[in-house]
Length: 246
Image (cartoon, rainbow, N blue to C red; front, side, top):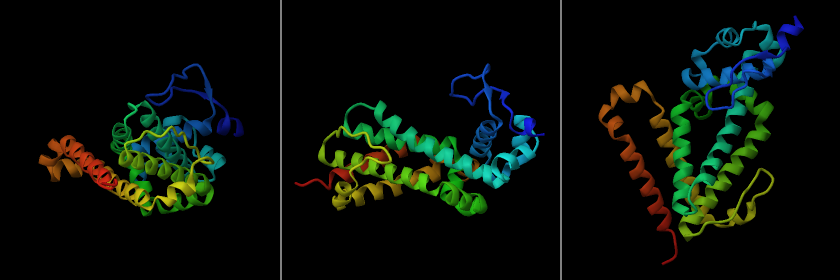
């Protein structure tokens, strides 16, 4: 039984990642990846452990053996998703032109793209009561790591915001243990504006990830949403620039 529960299997990776057709993959990893994929598209309430196990080709015993429970699997998958999300935002910034506005726009667009492609996980993170037991376990088991990632992400957003205000491109590459915490906190206006920007973008992320609800209730806005998003980002940048000294 233990061999079936935890032995490697051959499978293909999720779209967008290198092929691993010829690589033996631990079942633990396969379960995490399939859970990430299914919850992203269907939401935590509409995905079951049986669906994940059937897709991977194992029994439910593999979930209990590796994660303790179905909620334990969701918790670890969620921690993985959040870490990848933060890293993905920074990859987008690094790929943008060395122009302060372009870097912030790249960051925001990466957030929106993630939200539209991962609406199920957006619900888990932004409305934790939708998966209360799993999100509680995520905080208990991975809270320290997630909190460090959150602080890093906010530090990057704050620096990007200050750069737009000051017309600068800072040569920074923060990580969880290396960012100018005190310096960023001391710029109260920059910190406040970055937080407001984050809240504004979160609203766009939630709105644009509504799927069928958005399409059926507000079809005209759905048709114009790209232009509205572009307008919203321009408004955010104008507001940041208005904070600069005359």
